[in-house]
Image (tube, rainbow, N blue to C red; front, side, top):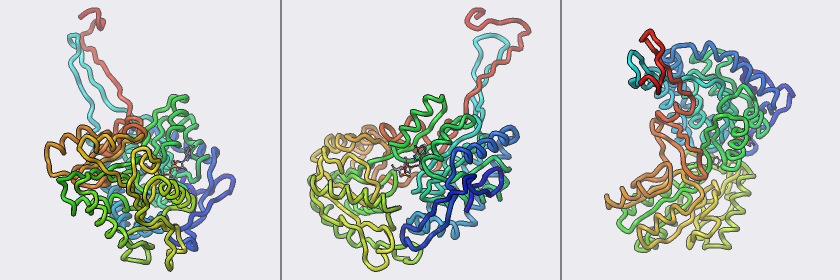
Length: 489
Ligand code: NAD
């Protein structure tokens, strides 16, 4: 497996590689990928800079047509690509198909945006003068992503960046590199010219080189808050635009009037779907006293029946592996912390039954009696671990949900319409759901978070195009004389 630079598949200049394995079965080696560094990034950035003039001058509707074809190819390759993705990062085939569907939706949305990219015209303060403003591409975009949505998350950045006329250097996560290469194959087949889209594989050093490279004018990052914050500091020093999508610690509130069947389904999916490895995963369940015991009892019964397994070989699997040993160790360390703070009522161990022993599987884990001062209430664990906290009123529920350094997603289960709307107003998060779990973003809606989750940008929908364009204000004076703004009015 190689880098994709200027339309060609090339090894890293150093010849160094890293291997990627299937987290559900460590005996299955997916491949060796180039361990790229600053020199490889420089080649990719140069190719992207060289490709920029022609690509940015292509009419946006034509760029959109190319992206529509990319959406068609993602759809055509759905079965094959979902298997590749399940193999490299472990979530079930149903979920990896959803991941690809999100890229298809994003491609079709970006395609139509090629015919919008609206500007704004305003009256001039002077006679015989017109004011207009329009969007311009920025240049080369550096895209750095996490492994948990190997196609969907890159698509949220890459496709809007491209339709706006930018070119791209993309570094996929070192835990999900194969999908990055498929992304390149699909864009190439769709008609994206050589150099417009480039893939460099590697780890933190490769990401740092992207941030540093002077030709790269904007950085789009998805990953942990620690990494994102360090990238933002560097981009600040280098005067680069940077968009950050980072960690989460999302709460689902269940009020005393909630439909408990629905709330139960919601928390099972929110907490244990994708093995809890979603930035929007439900990691805190805040339950009203009146329904706490009943919901917890039912939750324990349902969660212990969840089937762990390798999505490629076990059609019944509902919960896949944790991405790697480092992440499993981190989760197990949090279980120890949690056990010293609260009550462990389910799971807590690595799962090693039968074939599970070949991968990094973690039992679905639930803590009760968790309070706001506990580390498992406050810190992102990024695994199948759920904390349950009691509340006795709406106000307390909201206060608990908001008592957190992150602000990505949130949810409330209630049948009271006034309370539902109050919660939409009161929850400190970029995304709030009523009677639905904390996961489930749609491609045409803004996506992102506040506080420790983001830096004010939103991917998805129309807001992504703000990230990847600059505004130009243009004035046309057809009076035939000098008119001085603010003076000759
Ligand atoms: P991570 O921060 O370790 O790595 C993310 C990417 O950054 C990888 O490609 C990595 O190689 C690269 N990287 C690492 N150090 C770097 C550096 N110093 N400079 C430049 N690049 C660097 O995150 P991860 O473990 O891959 O992903 C899990 C995290 O991602 C969780 O915190 C999760 O919440 C977050 N996430 C957020 C969203 C969102 O949209 N908010 C979506 C998915 C995942």
